[in-house]
Length: 440
Image (tube, rainbow, N blue to C red):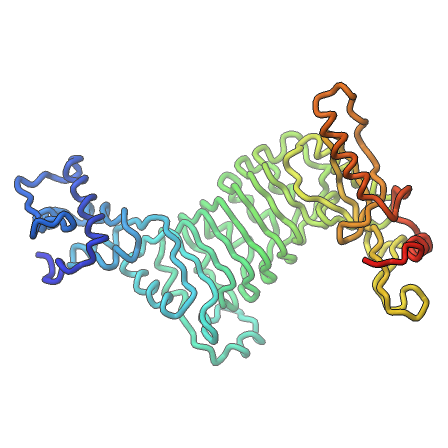
């Protein structure tokens, strides 16, 4: 029998349950009752008789159309409690960013263990999760008096998780249970400075992972080739600003489903010239770090190295025009061609005026279909003249007017470095800007 207070339950979710139950009967999912009477004549309440005829599997199916909070309120008797435990909860993001939300999720871990999507964020001030294995000792000391919450008890029970986001969560150390979900497809870990983990545990504990997104995690370690066990599942990989991840990006070249790869500011190495026509067959977006020859932010030892790097990138861009996004290379501060800027008394006249930034970055430019490159300052302004890699399109060709319009805009951006196709010497640089009466 239903519990005595069932009629007082919120009409909003019972209306949903009622509609679903009626559909279940009419579609033959469960036997039709010979007589169905609505209590009090209200359309918002399901008949007691219909509910009593439903088994736990049918109730679990109905609960699967409701958000988690409604399922929790709908557990009115033992049968409904058991049905809730069987329910595959819809993909609704369940946030944990306060003590109250943590307590609620801890309750759901036994009441609704089949939740599929969870986001762990920062807790309230002076609250943290229990330290993991091998915690950072300084951070552990600084947070020794914080209110502690046992994350393992809360999250390890959700065995049907498909999406887990960990964003600025107060974690310190290693938590193997965070990387042991057999059906997890999407994992995002952002700005978790003291969370220690490696690529190998991701690859072994998450066998069907499709999307891996790691950003600003200094304690993430491992070699990129550890992901090869996920070759047939991975579709998107972002390992950005994670300097302790090593390996060669070409270790992922034969991943048949990989659509997006972002390894910016990681410790990965390689050479863009090694990418063949059959490599990365499904790739739609690519960001490579400066440790890769031709990667974004690649550092050149000499100004004369620019042409070789540019030609490698240009050749790749011609083969795969949609892959590279915003790209640049730069002259290394260790280069003998490099000279400083912004120092006090840069001008040697006793003033504290900062000198303008020299054009030590190389950017690709495009006018219509014509591609070239030029040297610009690190701020992206004060460019040199463009060195065009493609010939000028024919006047009668399609898009010629667009080319002329874009070409003229590019030419108008050149001012101080007119006539310079590469960075000036330090003496030329200071002379040019002295004559300009520099004001940035």
